[in-house]
Structures are given as C-alpha cells and as structure tokens.
Length: 566
Image (cartoon, helix red, strand yellow):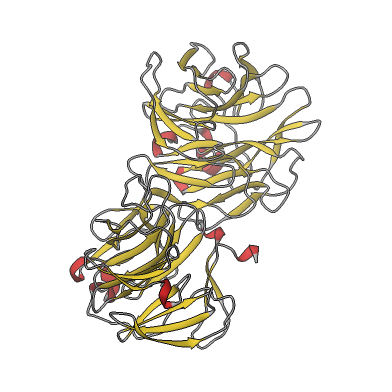
C-alpha cells in the first residue's frame, strides 16, 4: 500500500512479525529501491533511484548510522538509477546495474564498498534486469530484457560470455542467484523458476511453473565467514565498519558526523541548514557531505528554519492542515523530535521564527485572518506570550540581535517595510520604508550587526546598519531569491527559480559570479548557517545573571540607550 512505499522491513526467517527497519520519517531522501546485506560489516546497502545514490546503514546498535557511499557526481562511473546491487564483502566490492540518466550511462559497474575506485564493467547493456555474484569464482552474472539474455563477466570486466538467450525460452530473466555451480533465475513472463548448469547454461530444469506475479527471489545459503577486521569489535570503528579491498576495512561516519581520524567521528561544527518546503537538509560548506540527518517524510511544508548552536537544536516552522503544523525541533543527528508550538495557531499559520540564544527566548509570528501576532516563549515552547497584536501591520519574517537587544521584522502590509523593536515588542520603529517591494527574508550579521535582506521583486540583496542607517546594495539581478544567511565574510542565499544555494562576499561593489554551493534543489525556501560565530554569547546580558535575570518566566533585556531595566 502507499504508506508502505519507501519502507524497509525485517522479519525472522522462520516467519513471525515484521518490524520496520527504515521508513520515510528516518530522514531518507527519495526512496529505497534495491537492498543488499553486507554480512561481514553488518551493513544494509540501499540503492535509491530518486536521490541517485547508494547508502550503507549499520544494522546493529541503538543508533542506525547511515553513510552515502556513491552519488551522481556527473562522472560516467557514478550512480543514477540503481536497479539492483550485489555485494562481495570478502573482497570489499559492490556491484550494481544502473539504468542511467542525468549524464550517466546504462551500465554494469563495480566499486570498493566505501565508494572509492568505481569502474564500468559493461556499458553496451540496454535494459538491465538483475545482477548476482559467484564470489568464489569472482564472476558477475547479469541479465537484460531487450534482448533477453543472461551474461557472465569477471570482476575485471573481461571474459564476457552470453549464457542464455531468447532461444532458451527467456523474456525477462530476474532474481538471479548462484549455488554450487548452478544459476537460478525466474521469468515473470514465462511464469517459471529455472536452474541451469554453469558455466555454459546447459541442462535447464524448471523448478516452478505457472507461477503468476513473480517479483524477485534470493537463495538462502551459508555465506563465507572469513577472519575479517570488521567482525572484531566493529573493526575499531566508532560508527560504521566497511569491508575494503584485500581483506582490509575502512571506517565511515554516520550522516551528520565527519571523520576526526581513521576511526572516530565528530558532529559537524559548521553547515548550512536549507529547507525545500517538503524537506530540510544540512550541507557541509567544505565538501559534498550531508552534515545532518535530513528532515523528510510525507506531509511536510517547511517555511522557515533556525538553530540553537549551544544546545544543538534545529528549529523549523511548518504550515499545514495536518500533523505537521506549528514549530518543531530536532537534533542534527535526527533524534529527539519535539513539537513545541502545536496549539493556538492562526488559520494562516506561523510565518516567522527567531531564536534569542542569549536570553533563551523564541520569537514567532502567528497569522490569523484579521489579526497578526508576534509571540515569544521559552525555547521549549512554554511560557508563551503575545507581545504584539496588530490589525494594520503584517509582521512575517523575524530576525533577532541579542547583543544589541533588538528584534527586526519584515512587514508584508500594503506598504512593505522593515522595522525594529525592543525584545519585549515595545518601541516599534520602521527602518526601511522606501525602495522595498517584496522582501522575502532578513538576517543579522553578528560580526558587524548589519541587517541584510533579499527582495524577490527588486531582485536584490541589501543591507543597513543595526540602527537603520548606511544602506547599501550588495547584489543585483538575482532571479528569485527566497532567503539569506551570513557566515563570516560571505552571504548565502537560495534562489527558487535557479534551484540553487549561492555564496558570495558580503561586501558591496563585488560583481564576480557567485559560487554555487548546491544545485538542482526543488522548492527552495529558507537557509540558515549552523555555526558558533552566528550565535556569540554576551556575558553582560542581565538575563544571564541570577539565573534567567531573577525572572520566574520570560526575561527581556533592553539596549543601554533605552534606560529601561530588564
């Protein structure tokens, strides 16, 4: 059924209850299409045609660490639409048949199980159906549909030999398996399961006939258990032990972690959190890896993301009719999902979020048909309070500067503008009222305290100083910028029409082409940078003294020039 698509189950050999191993809500981008088990490293390999990748998932232990071993990097040897995978962990090899696309040829290919050293074994194949291995003889068997045939080839891509053709009464051979010098296969068109002798395909014997709806099969047999480093104490690896060439092993780190040395793993300290309406992912700014477990699954409509660096939280805002409506948070490693604002939400949804990491408050805009609220609560959603209630203005996106003790927001009213106020919502004053058309997002540069915003109608990025002066244009002629973030000396923005995350210097007067950080991302919506520099502490903040400033509930501190006590 539909709700079981993309889900992997486990069940005991002798029958019994099935349990879910991995589903959409485990942060799988795309859908699992083919699986193969590595019995030496005890990892499940998953081929994913939507995400164009192959992942390995550790099956033991409380945390199912996942790592992507092969992606579509545009090379001919990479993965596009994996149809089936086969593993030889004793030699540390992965084999797969690929239907090709996106610049990748249809092929039979092989790589080391950590994804290194990929090579094409055969690329004249047109419609590959299935693949299996004879590990002892180091042979690969694969089948195709047009023309219908079963072919053998060795691990080096040599000694290719056609074993069965249409004359052998086959049409769509699949479910290949080798056992004791015999090849087994099924053919759903002929509705039968057959075995033939190797190496030439002689003496065909029909094992089952007139079996409708044949899908796939696997031979249950004892597998060779060598002495292998992965079988002792997980090979010394902190997360994932992957069998490698010549009986060696490679340690890999789960998604959201990077290798510290050969065996140990640490969480990423810096990455971009990017939302695409139906998912949120974390991208390393230094390489191609995913720096957090993606937030995926059915029914997401993610408008905004924010972070709390010191406590490792990712926050996001959903606008939906179903379960996903309100504000949620999760750890970068995909654990401890919490819904923190679930009730009292206007029919037009929550439309902005800003985390005050110093005082420990969360600001959000809540939109009703005839009224707009700016609300504040603790970071876990408790002690919630409305600080601005307006019918004339339309506050949406928010940004907070806890050091200068100011809150900024974009007003989507009849005359768009950007305003600022104190952290308790008082003293609201407009700072940008002209030369602004469709502001989509704003952010604070915590190194200079400047405020940056993107305007998707004027197609510009502009900035002002924290008090509203010194306005400057940073970039012009953008396609459809939706959101912006600042990190050190750079700005990052997402462009929905170009499907791309861009990066450029934050200083004005630079017209060099922006760098593409990630591309081909549909429905881009928001970006923020997870990094300690974006959330510096302030030891002078009164709300940090006496434990929460001596307050039972919400604590607000004011700019020194306001002459107000917290």
